Figure 1 (cartoon, one colour):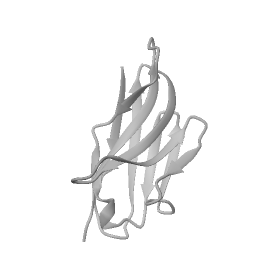
Figure 2 (cartoon, rainbow, N blue to C red):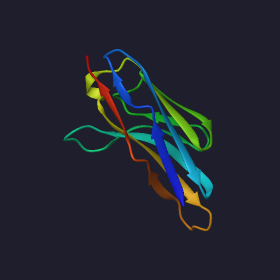
Figure 3 (cartoon, helix red, strand yellow):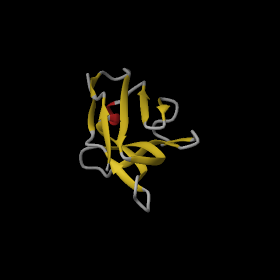
Length: 120
């Protein structure tokens, strides 16, 4: 079984910064990629940023130049958010595409989400 846990959300003023953390744990054989998604009230969940097993990163156009996704090791990633805007307010979810020990296929594992509110 594989689990993903996020932390680091909170209230921040426009223009401020925040760092989200995500750690995958459990019976993990391999992780193909990890990433962050977000869902604002009344909107669909959207991809924010992801990093592959070889370290390649991709960002949504809306966060390029403001957010940086980094990796501490194969199972821990961080989302460094700066120049935050009110429209960044959302629940942020971490996702890992992981192969559990004994499993045949990679599965998408989601965290419980962490709320980021950008407001003055």
